[in-house]
Image 1 (tube, one colour):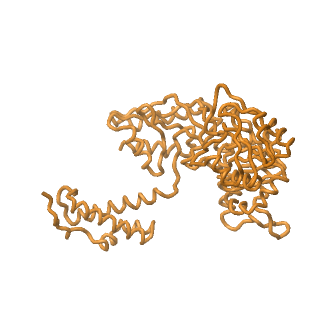
Image 2 (cartoon, helix red, strand yellow):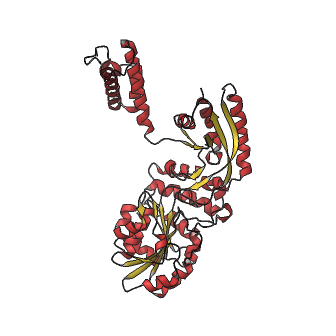
Image 3 (cartoon, one colour):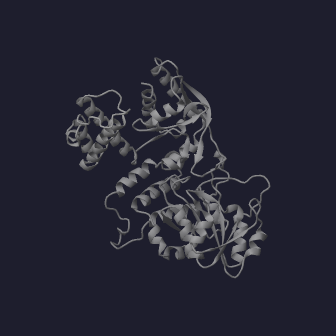
Length: 469
C-alpha cells in the first residue's frame, strides 16, 4: 500500500531553483517570467512523482535539485522548439509545406534584410509623394506573364476569394465537377465560392466535361466561368476537359469573365523535369484567360503570396474591392518577390532560385554528393557496431500540391542500426540543433541530399554521428 503522506520536505523550493546557474542561463534567453513558470512546473512534477510513488529510490536534496534543474531545462528547450527555427530538409520534398515551402534565394534574403528597416514601400523617391505598394513586383509579374496588370495578396487562397468576391458576388460561376477540389487545410473550392457570394453551377462529370456542358449552363445570372487546376491529384484514363482557349472563346462570346486558379503555377515551362501538367501562366494569359491566380511560394520559389494577373479592366475591379486592403502583404513579401522575379527576368532562375536548382538537379550530381557523404560517415561511425550507412536508389518529391505524379529520380543516404529502431534514429536527428528532417522507408532512415544546401552538409554529417554517441 502506498504511503499517502510522503515526506516532501526535501523538495527544492521554486526560489532555490531560480537561483541556480541553470535558471540564470534560461532567464537570459527566455526572460524571468517564462523561467519562473518552468521552475514551478519542474517542482510540481517532482511533487507529483513523490506523491504517486513514481520517483523510484529516495533522492537527496542535492539530487532532487539537480532533477528539477534538468526538468526545467527540458521544458525551456521544449518551448523554444515550438517556435520558428531553422531546420535541414533532408526529406527530399522540394516544396515542403510543413517546412515553409520554397526556401528563398540569397538575393531574396538580402532584399528582406534591406526592407526590414524603413523602406520606400509606399513612397516614390522621384517625386517625394505617396506611391503604390508593390508597383515594381506587379510590373515584373505582368512582364513575365504577358498580362496587362498584376496584383499581389498574402496567399493564393486569398487571391481566389478576392477574385470571386469582387467579380462574381451575387452572380453565378460555372465550374466543372472534376475541379471542385479540396486543395489542403480544408480549403474547398465549393466552400470558397459560397463564402464569396457567388452561386455555384456545376457542369459535366468528375472525369469528363465538354464545352457544351459549360455553354448549356450559362444563364442570365452567370458572370464567370471558373477553371481550377486540381494541383494535388490527377484523374487519368477516360477523361476530357476543354482547353483554356476554348473556355475563353465561349466566355467572351457571352460577355463573361474566364477565371483560372492555376494553383502552384509556373512562370516557365518545366515539362522537361516531369511537370508537364502544371499550367504555365503566360500560356493561360495568351490563351485568353481574363484573370489567373497562382502561388508565390511554390514553383515560383519565392515568399508566400497570392499572385493575380490578367486584363487591366478586370484587375482594376479587383483592386478596388475593400477586401484587397485586408489581403495585401507586407514589405518583406514584396522585397522577396522582387528579388526572385529579377532572376527570371535575367534568365538566371536555375542558378539562383533554390526550388528550380533542386528540381533540375540530375541523379548523377546528387549521387556524387551522396557517395562522398556516405564514405565519410562510414569512417566516422566505424566504431559503432550494428550501424550501417549506404547509398540507395530513391525518388524525391516536388511537394506543395505540385505535380503529384512526378517523382524525380534520386539517391539517398540509408541509415540503419541493429540497436535502434528507425523511429528512434529519426527522432535523434530531429532533436539535433539544428534539427535534421529525413524520412523512413523500408525500416531505414533516408536522407535525400537533393533538398540539402551545400553549406548544410557538414552539419548534417555531425547530426548523424551525434545520433549514435
